[in-house]
Image (cartoon, rainbow, N blue to C red):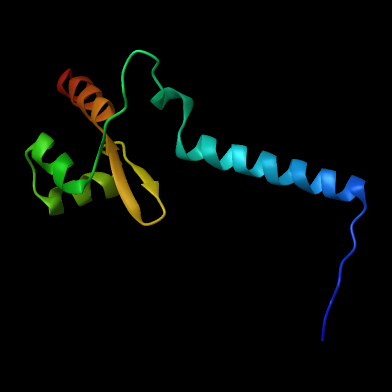
Length: 96
């Protein structure tokens, strides 16, 4: 059973706008503006690299993530840590 859809030019244009807006929204969720810096290059770390930087185990890093104690970014099933965010977070936490 073949099903065929015919769209008018206006419908195609509107569908294109919807897709474009959705993609922009998702890109902003993945890469918020506060991560972008014109003067610094963003360095993303994997879990092992973040552990080395923080001096903790993978298990401890997981608990920090789960409890919201450190900032992280998830793309699909992969977890990344922005080095500058981690270092800044450590500075903020150590002031208390």
